[in-house]
Every structure is written in structure tokens, then in C-alpha cells.
Image (tube, rainbow, N blue to C red; front, side):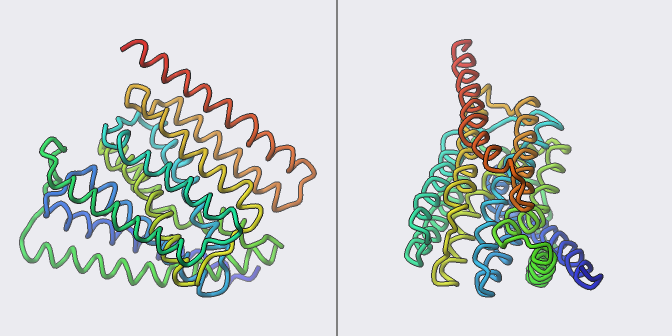
Length: 351
């Protein structure tokens, strides 16, 4: 690995993070000026803005003939968002969960995770299926915006200046953020691919690890800072909204751009089931007193460590990789879901 490639990777990550910060900051001010509630801002503007690196990387990877990176980026980002970002945010401070997330958004996240997995079972997400995903993104966004504007019980919108100059500055941040995201995504994909292939790592693992973690840095920074500042609607809404947009918007647009996305057997039988199980695990967690407790956040963090360990074992051809993967799929995950279900029953019996 030469120094030029390493610098390319680091510069790509810096541009992605800076671009996402500018995009989210500007877009949040524009949305708040339109009197949209913090939860809806978190689910839409912040979530979609912080997912812009995933969009840029996945579309570029598909057009460059590396669809495994595009798919791995989406799957890995969704797993990273819930297990690491939501887990870390809850470990810092227990997160209050809005009733809307339980009624609408988390069920939607679970449904689109299952739908993407089913679409992939024949080894291809076709252009028609990709179009259906994009249509779903448009419908979901429209529902959120309409509900956010009509919901008189929603939290008060963020206070921002509404002068013409302030709005123009916010718009300029959005444009600058988009420019940096495009440049940063290209450098990140080029650098990560060169480095990982030099070590003999396949494209799917590259997408699931290096690219997914890199493009999820904006979500990580946004949710952790929101948690520290007490803006917990934005912290949780950012994760849930990003996961929905990753599957509907990003996977859909990448599939349309590339004429479909081939899905490897490994993604069909392990990574997509893990992503779906992670989404399902959110619902009982959110039910328990409408709070994500610290211990639940720590469980999520532990799972992310285990998942990353599996990918490392797979990439290095470790002799125990099959047994480790089977233990995660058929023992650890079902046991945790059962534990969470019992917790839900107990919580409801006390009410």
C-alpha cells in the first residue's frame, strides 16, 4: 500500500464528513424555517443528508462496475447505524423514543428490510424492483412531511433566523456540502478498493466494513452530538430515517443507475438476514418504556463487535468462521430477540 492511496482514503473521509456536516447544517436550518418538527427533521432532512455519502458511494460504485461495494455499503451502513451508532448514543444517555417511531417508522424500517431481502433471494435486485424502492422512498417522505406539518402536538421546531441572508447562507452550505460529498465519495471508493484488494479482500467485505463505516461517520457524529445535547428525537430519528432511506432511496437509485444490482450468495444467506434481524430487534427495544436503556445500547455494541469479528475472520479465511457465523445466526440473535420479547411482556404487565 503506497502513501498516495492512503492519503486518498483519508482525504475522501475528510471531504465526506465535512460535506455531510455542511449539508445537514444548511438543510436543517431550511427545514426548521419551514416549521417542521425536530423528529421529522431527524427522519428526513438530517437522515437523508447524513446518508448522502452512502448515496454518492453506492451510485458511483455501481457505475464503476463494483455493485458488491454498493450493496455492501447499504447493508453495512444499516447494521452500523443501529448497532454502533444507536448503541453508543444510548450508552451515553438513555434515549427517549417517540410514539411515532413505534407506530410508523420502525415498522417501515422492518418492512423495507424484509422486502429488500426477499428481492435479493433470486440473486438480483432488478431495475423494476429498484424503481419500486425509489417510489417507496418518495411516498414515505411525502407521508412524513405531511404528518409533520399537520401534527400540532409535535415538538416545537428549532428556532433559526428566517432572514433572506440566513436562508441564502443555508442554501450555499447545502450546495457546498453536495460538491464535497461527490468528490469525497470518489476518493473514498478508489482508496478503499485499492487498499482492500491489495490484501485480497473481496468487494462485498470492502463495502460492509471500510466503505460502510466511512460513509456512516456523519450519522455517528450527528447522533452522538444530538444525544449529548439532549436532542434525542434527532438522535434516534437520524438512525431510523437513514436506514429507511438507505434501502429505499440509495439501493433503489443505485439499481436504476446500474440496470439492477447482483446479490452474492453470502449477502443473501448472512448479511441481509443479519440486517433484517437488527431492524426487528429495534421494535421490542423501543417498546420497553419507550426508552432505549444503557444496557440495551451495550448489547447493540456487543453485537457490532461480534459482526465485525466475523467479517474479519471471513476476510482472513479463519478456520472457525463458519461455526462463528452459524452461532450468530441460529443462537445469539434468536436468544436476544427472545430476551427482548420477555422484557416487552414484563413491561406491559406492569402498566
